[in-house]
Length: 121
Image (tube, rainbow, N blue to C red; front, side, top):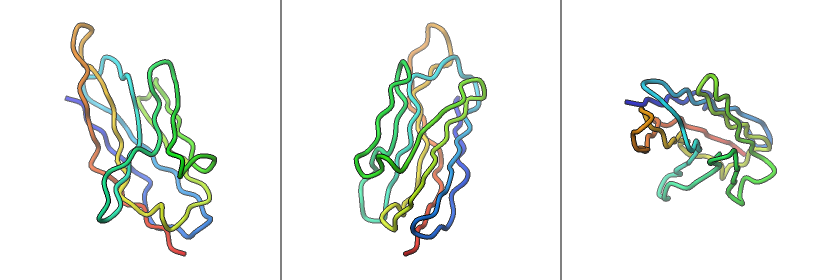
C-alpha cells in the first residue's frame, strides 16, 4: 500500500504564507502524478496544483501566481508553498498521487487524510 501524510496546515491571516508538505511512504515503485486538492465546506473537492508525467505543472486559475507546487523525488515528498493567502483559500487540503508498487503493476490512486488551512481576513 501507499500512504500519504500531509503536514503544515493551520491558521493564517490574509496576505501571509503557509507551506504544506506531503510524505509518501510504503511500497512505491514509481509515482506518475502528485497533486494537491482542496475541499471547502459545502463545496466539491477541486484541483489546486498538479505535477504530471515529465514534470508538467498545472494550477487552478484561482491560485496561479500565488501557490507553487514542488517535489523531491528522492524523498517521495511533495510541497505546496502558498503565498498571499486569501480567506477563500480556507479548506481541507489533500495530497494525491498516482503510483504503482511494482514494475509490471498498474497505477492506483491514493489520497492523504487532509490538513486544514484556515485563512482569516
